[in-house]
Length: 120
Image 1 (cartoon, rainbow, N blue to C red):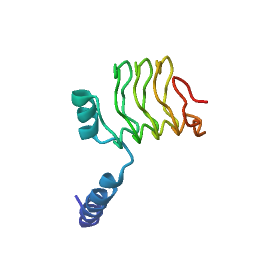
Image 2: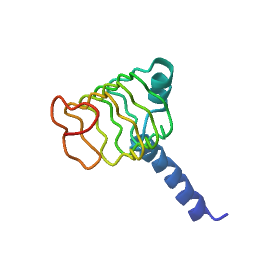
Image 3: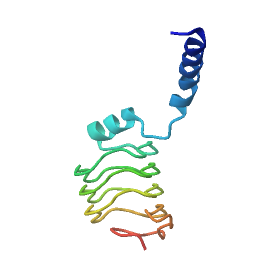
Image 4: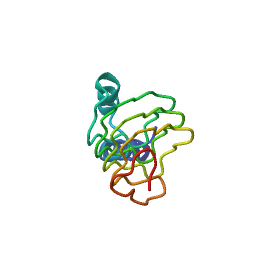
């Protein structure tokens, strides 16, 4: 392998160390916390795959769920006050009794204070 190629690969590897930590994706520790305790206020769950999961009564106040896959999830009586669901996949997600006050909805609009079960 030529010296120029080796220098190029070294520079790319070095720069990758700066780019990877800046990625905009969920924190695996936050997913674990949610799964273990059913509570994860202000957690970063952006782009997480939570499809088909059951989070009845979950506390997700202020959580970032933007771009998350929540298809078929059950969020009965959960608290998503001030959460961010922008661009999340909520196909067949059950929000029965879920608090959605001031939640940023999938289309970017803000749910009205007092919204329960659906964004108003």
